Image (cartoon, rainbow, N blue to C red):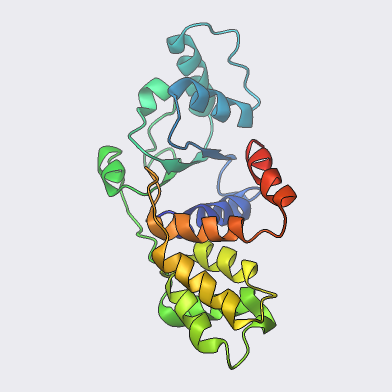
Length: 230
């Protein structure tokens, strides 16, 4: 599904609900992202297992060590934000089979990744329908939406294209704004801003940029890139 559509939130909820139950011996959540490499991904998985791969200098030895640890466990592995196929054999992750009860869940914006990974089942994360999008926007914008502002507020909400992330950040940014001109400026920005950013959809980027620009002071804006490093 599209970025900002709630895929990560969904699998995080799955992770939190299943972890600590009897369904799996171990539940592992790892964010992969666009700039991934197989060594880093393997190490991230190993850390969740308290497994030290540092003594294995070669890739084959490290993947074998991870494989041997996982093959003894009934595991759920969640790989969030895949941009391309991950070779499970090179990674060191056993292929789930019916007789071992293991599962791998992936999230991706690209349906071709599901084909390349030969997934058994695909769930498309759709955007919110108009009614649910408006209800979420009202919840986040709160009492700022008076009867006078409601028509333009609905237009602003539509510019979020049903994406939960966009609705939340724009709604929160406008939560205390009661002046029509502020809402008009917000709508104009969301409709007319130029967009050129490889790898991110316009519908996701513009609401995030609006929220960033709407921060009250330069100090807060300067804190934003600093916090992104963590």
